[in-house]
Image (cartoon, rainbow, N blue to C red; front, top):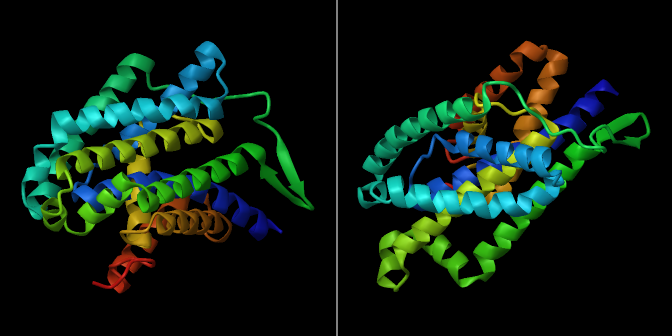
Length: 290
């Protein structure tokens, strides 16, 4: 019974891991830019949801309707100010330069968050925060279940956008081969900006969902960036639902580790999975062999 309960909790947190990783996967897959400030963008989305609820009593799930476009605009601004110069270089230089910019952006956003909101942990507590769905002897927190369903719905909507719309197909074509896409008349610069802004919006929405079920603070950025990187390695590039499945796998592995090896080793399990998959199947569990 304990194993099943932990399995349920692992699936619920894994959905958030998958959503957080999807934004980073989209950014890296299209631009070949590794934004290690992704966790800090997630943190900003969490604070946005917290303050909308605290100041104006806006329901945290409804606040995502404001968080998503605000973070999209922030992503577009960051791309124009910082990352558009990186994508002009060849792929190896893109990754190196984006790492430097990302680390700098991480320090700036972390220090800014402490200055504005202190280092205290914050969380959103609603009237239904303690609600639980009973499935026989098992308890499923409504908030975490709702967050999982929201995360899946968001990824499904993004999948439809990438598959069925003109700009979505342009993003996919640019991810495959930006030079061929440019020759076909696709505005690669605008496509890069759109992909980066979408990745930032996904991070912000993930942060909003995190603030509903967990606490947020300026220090959570590095933790969630690491989670997203682990999920991307597990899932491989090129599949949004692969990222979602990889996130659930990581969540379940961490939850099971609490039973078998104890809570203090929970974070180690993710790193072990990261190394094993990187060695045995570097293209990821859901990625195609190159």
